[in-house]
Image 1 (cartoon, one colour):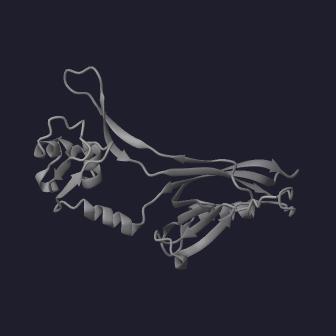
Image 2 (tube, one colour):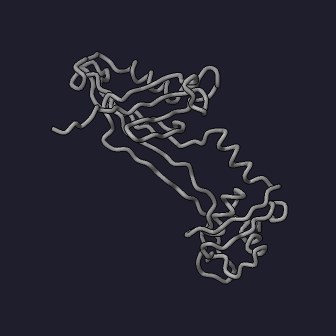
Image 3 (spheres, rainbow, N blue to C red):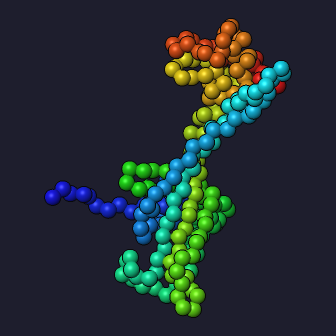
Length: 230
């Protein structure tokens, strides 16, 4: 008989610092039951602008939004799942709510999280917690609830600083175009603003900036020499 391996439970690890170091760990939650499904959302935002004399609106890339993770977790005190019936799950839900959205005393802000489940690893902040009560004792105290949690991905501070340095106004660079890259996207990656593409196209004497040729070399000047078009 094949070995199916050990059952891994979803863990939510809380930290007081975005670096998520072991010495900054301030709490942990292990799911009673793994979620049946979880969702990962990826969003890109565009601005719509209509040129003079045109009948359609052109969508211009503005920003790629941080990834979002959401799932539903079950809390059950009936004893059916774990064989440990309890009278009320209010204390467990209070502790879970405090872990996810409560302030950490030293940092004076909500915590940072690492979600671990098998091969999945997600780092971010909790942006929403919704509790739906499902089952009650005769006196009305809840004994089963479903918690929908949503986390938004975050970038570690040292990585964010490194990316900002790469967009310094004093830097110029050469870039070899890869398949599928567009000039507005490259301007966003390098400068942090896609609106610089007209000036970059002018500097590189591009006849058709909408169709970059894979392998061609583009020059991206310092920001001071490439003011974005209004």
